[in-house]
Length: 82
Image (tube, rainbow, N blue to C red; front, side, top):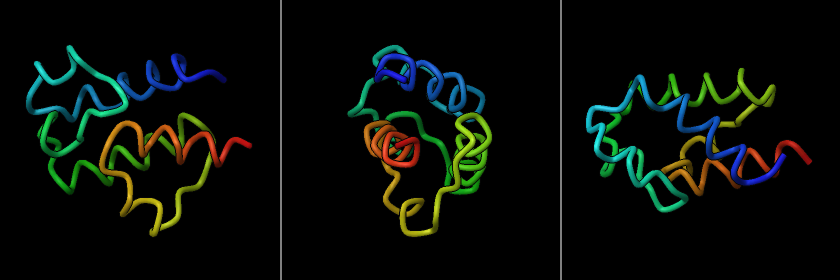
């Protein structure tokens, strides 16, 4: 699975939780879930659960705490898919 496909699937996952839709226009590895998309911490847990389901992976608590940007999420997904 390439980076473009991962980012596309991630964008679909976070879209319903995004409080600042304009943040989705420039969705890239530097997009911050909290600052750019204004996803609250409760919904961030939902994002993690949706990522686990979408990619059929399990994200541990340490990885979850480090998942602040789209790039962080992409790296975690890539590492789990190997």
